[in-house]
Image (cartoon, rainbow, N blue to C red; front, side, top):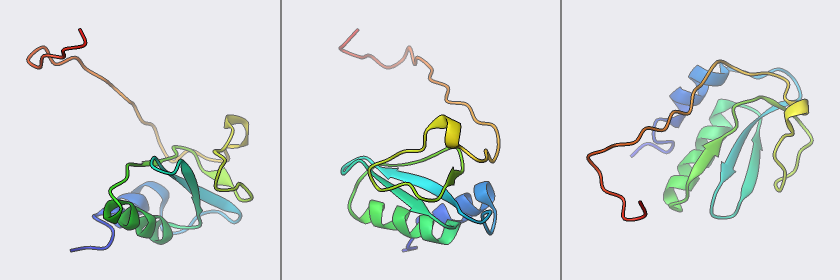
Length: 102
């Protein structure tokens, strides 16, 4: 079983082989609400592997952050130093699925 569940390739595709100096990738784990500030895709892939082992959801920040943020912080929008591409978060309603809340 791979240690990163395919994350290394994805993270390298998004961020490249190396980041600009003093910049970090954000990964955030839901169970402990912790921010992980990582220097490269390899480090980030190891965190993804750990998250899978511990069965927690993990999220990636969409912007490149400066170094110096701690594990309880996320990067404020005015401190983002780069964005690797465009993205969309599109939710759709599936009429074939019944939700008891509606």
